[in-house]
Length: 211
Ligand SMILES: [Zn+2]
Image (cartoon, rainbow, N blue to C red; front, side, top):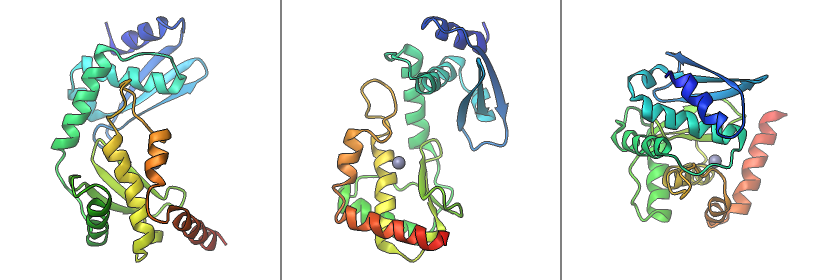
């Protein structure tokens, strides 16, 4: 059975009759993936690096994305467990390929102050979009920060802290689903010193930039 029909079969179990298409793309970063709904059709775009991965694991990725996309009330499956283990192993094995002195010292400050120095150093990069302040890609273990914040260590520390919480909490969900900005996340986020003040300063940097 193809991956598409196994995904359709998974949906069948929820009484959903969507057709499923899976497209591999070489333009994605390794192990990136996304899913969208086009009418009654569900289209997955997967980085071509998924081609070399066992279908049992890829099916776990697909199920995971379906659960999130369609907000299915599903427990974990064997495939989702396999996928989570795989994602964890590539995260710890992913080589550090890019770095940046300013983000590296920012990481060292935040890791020391909030994580007892226990987090492994991820990759770092700057991006130029102002719509996305910062992000964490757990497949490539990369923290990316908008270059609007260069030279603003206090704001950078707060953005870095947020992304490192994603790195730390990514696999702590008991349902096997990735935690995003859940209750635990928000509580931890606001334990950052002067979080409220810093959020206001970030807003004013963005406002200045927009006008
Ligand atoms: Zn976030």
